[in-house]
Image (cartoon, rainbow, N blue to C red):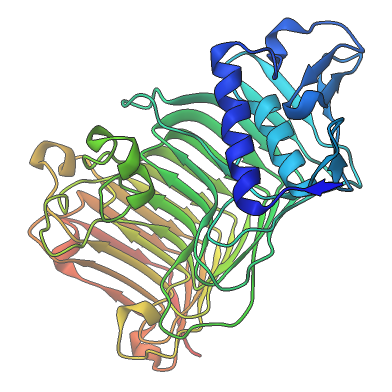
Length: 411
């Protein structure tokens, strides 16, 4: 009995997927199956999934190493990666169900196409390889056209590796994404979810957890809302320079999640030395009803965002770097210069939050001449080791600051 080595398995998977493109018939497209009992085939002439009466495709999970007719043994994580790739790829409308109670071991990133729903309620998916996440789209267009109409529902999505960096979910240059009710277990050097140059995306009712050993100097966000540049999104460089030209996120909703990481939630900017993209700004970021914890950096940081709402959250930083902004609970900072006509309309609302920081509970500052039209900070409870530092609002950050009914406490 032959057993395939890791390098052989990678070659085999590449050949299988290439065969699909050339029409070898090794992977059947979900678009061609329409009735209960119809199947979707994957590599090695194995059934990847079967249609149920509701028109959903139920994944055929491999739990033991698979032996082909020729006697070659392929490990289960390779089989599952190949099967899930076959089910999720392409832009045809499709719903994939991963059976509740199943444990799906994986060795390669899965690349969902547009119009894909994955229902994983009660299932566990585990990435066995280091430096690899589980879901990521391959960008094929800009202007938020690479990926559309995708929903990920439920399931526990876990990295086996506890030290090496990756993004468990990474979606870029797309729109109309919903991530709902998932549990993601990453590590302190990884992003559980990275949204890069995305529009109209919602992350709600999720648990983003960390495992492994903490690094007191790490600033990796569990949930990252990012600008697409070579520095901030190096994984996109391979697809071409047009995907890393400073594209930003718009209309992102982060609702009712528990988020834990080296840094909890980060709305990012490009702070590289060249500062080519430092003036790129996100817009309409809504953060409501979350518990956000940063163990070595901020609980929540919002850089370069035109309009933002931060409401009814519990935000905590446990950073030991007491003199650095990394130890601020909620850090809102303008790092670049926005277009004047856009900044004249920009508004910030921070309301009803409980914020625990070290250097400050909350800070609002601008590092440039750009200012919010109006910043409203009200009904928050802010904590810091020094009570007077629990809330710091710089007059240079907004033309009008409404600071009412905030309570300051010694932490």
